Image 1 (cartoon, helix red, strand yellow):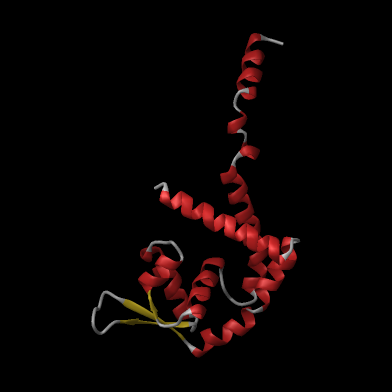
Image 2 (image 1 turned 60 degrees about the horizontal axis):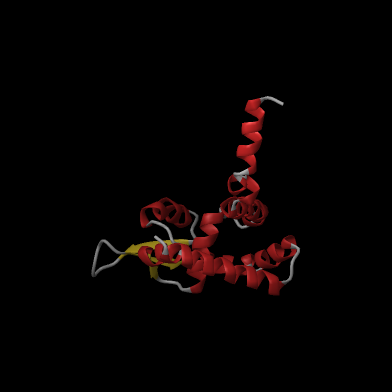
Length: 157
């Protein structure tokens, strides 16, 4: 063993905090990647991408909302939503209408096709639950912990 190897071993031993497998961010990131991979074929059957699915979830909760409202709900920038919303409109799932009171405000309305797609999407959560391999109770607990973590991280900004 050389002196260089001793330094590397010592440095690695003192840097457990920097090991990839010890990073919460990597656990979240890699789990998100796997979740998206599980969703992909389910959503392809609906003709949606994952970001489009998230937007549709918001619209199925509450139709006739503004781009700003959907942006806030998805924790994203309104400008980044525009291409996604245009695609959903081109696919006949929603209509984008400028407000008569304020032309800067764009309101989103589900079309009949967009409303009907909700029924087709009802199988998706069941498939995700099955793929997770854990109980609904454990998933709900994990979800709440992640929501709490997100709130704490937001408060730290």
